Length: 314
Ligand code: SER
Image (cartoon, rainbow, N blue to C red; front, side, top):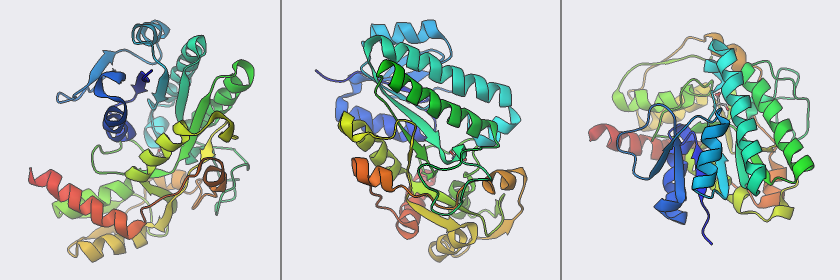
């Protein structure tokens, strides 16, 4: 029997890359995108309109499509969450609760996106362990940490197979991220390709864990494909790839795009970045379900610049 897969947040940064890959693997008719606002006019696939916070919407969609898997990506990110903490709580927490409550009715396999934002200023910042101090200071981080606990609770109480990754900053060219603290590492490529000056909102020594989108998609599919027994962490797995300072990023991008001009003007997002890890220890993901990344900074930079050049030439 083929899977029937619901993706919430299908047009966000991750969804934009994940949906076509799920369609390719499972058939276009088996992937249902939950559209809320900002539905791209050129979307090619099955679309359902609804709100993750609305139990009636979700009950109808789960039942009409006999959903067997859900990738729950709908979420407000860190910087926007500081501007709109009430909305971040509402979407991130209530959306997850509604999805989990629906999933337990028919034992749907759930993927949920967590983040390095679950860590905070009291967490060790280098090679941050899988199990460590979790005292986030952003609303986004608070919702991701509470969400991890909720996922584990549904696993323990109801036996729900829910799997999760703590994504680092993700770098991609299809959809721009919106409202995140790691967005500078995407924006620099856009500015390089458009020959515009890049004003970086964190200082040049800022180091955060990052990952190229293809690796993020690979890891997401890998954890969902792993056997039930392999998933030993039911909160969320550290998911690492590369770490670099903003200056190292600048230097590598300039190597391939020599005209790049960068100015550093840290703003309120610096304070958020300073509370997050510089690198994560993801050996649990590597040991439990075979996670490995492929893209280093150089390889990612070459692809990002090539793809963005194509995008803006069209
Ligand atoms: N990219 C996210 C953010 O910056 C981290 O999960 O908010």
